[in-house]
Amino acid sequence: MSYHEDGLIGTFSFDLDALNRHCKGSFFEDDISIILDHLAREGIVVPANLNNRQIQFKDIDAKRTIEQSKQKVYVKFDRPLKTEDLILPKRYNSPEVRDFILNTIHYKSACNYCSAKALNPLEATIHSTPVNAREPHGELRSTVRNYQFGFTFAPFGDPNTLCHFLAWDFPHINDVVMNMDPQWYSFSDLIKLVTVINRDIAAFCKEYKIENVPTVSGVCNHWAGNSIYHQHYQFFMLTDIPVLTRGIQSDITQVNDVLVRRLDWAMPVYEITSDKNDDEDVTFVADEVAKHWDALNEGYDYSYGNGIRITNYTQNIFVTQAGGKTRAIFVPRFRSKLNATGAHSQYRIEKNNMGVLETLGYFLIDGVSDFQRLEKLQASERNELGTAWLAEIAPPETSISGFEKQLCVELTTEVVAYNNKLGNASNHPTIESRRDHLLEEMSLIKTDRNLGQEQRLYLLREVNKLLFNNNPNDVFDDVALQDTAIPAALEILV
Image (cartoon, rainbow, N blue to C red):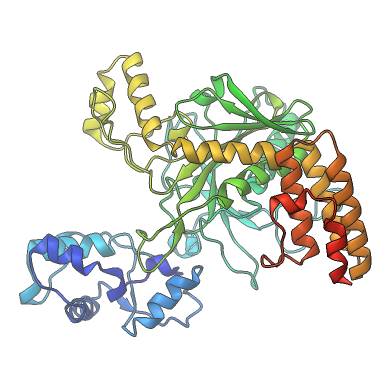
């Protein structure tokens, strides 16, 4: 069994203030230590060695929190636990304390993905990129990471028609496993995986003369709707995704033949497509859109526990190729907006842990009573409730307007071309040649009539940072950047 920091148990896992409020008592860290030692004697938790390779840390701050606690660390085997299983020392053995302890340790378990072979020894899995794996034409596979594929333990939809499987980050021996933080390649790797899966399905169907070739779509929740710490994608066949039927609310920006458009939806949702179906350009733009949202992050969420820090700006992503055209959907999310109360709807039904499927209009309902209430509503009434839920979890409009403005300025055909040239210029081997090429690009930027003023200023700031090796103390302000005398000031570089 393998664990990440989210699965470890120690005094650092417990909110003492919440425990004292819940139980109307006076509990201290020593009390938690006594309780955990007792649970270890009962075999409910097991002492853990932080230096064991079965524990893989992903969050340096969380590791520091756990190490600095100087307390014993435990892990829990994956077995069902009930309140009555927790027989505590007499002074703590109240229903309130047992409930609180159980709720704290209930989901702190081994990683389902790292432990796949131990948990499901008969499950067959495959890898997207085995060591030195090559495509038929001889090139290495193009995903940045290696992923292990297997079937899910939590399917949804009609079991007669739905195929639901997973791919989780599975690095080679010298790499570190990724958590659910968005990475610079997360979107493009999903696009590539969906493309390869559908290509292979089509080839299989052709070989065996199977008509009605199915289309597989892929998603990633990242930190919005996710319940597993280890980075993973989900793949499935769903024919009715409501958001895909909606029209365009507005065109946001364009890079070559790739369009970024906001869909007409109850919360901000962006489609990234190319009429020429150029997946290489689509993957580039998709990663750039995600990167620009991530760069706006303000604040962190520590509710995951154990010192784990999660950025508030996160995302849902979805890729489908229905009709033979790649459609990449980006949904900007706030980690602090996961649950919908339904307060803005007359039906007042709560929907917690809204993930990527919900943001696309496909709502998964867990509670029997909620399902029964929804079943009694008319279609129009369910639509009204769903719209209210989506509006409730949408990021603030101020954040969205800033995001869209940034895309319009920094992600256009002209700006991307200049950024590529600036990258090439900054790679010249000597200070003199770098300076000369950067100043040449600066001159072109100042006179290019295809650039708007904000685009021009953005590019000049980028040149400025490259000239001064990204030293924020040496950069000029926006007024100076427009001054034709600036190249003379840069003689200090030589």
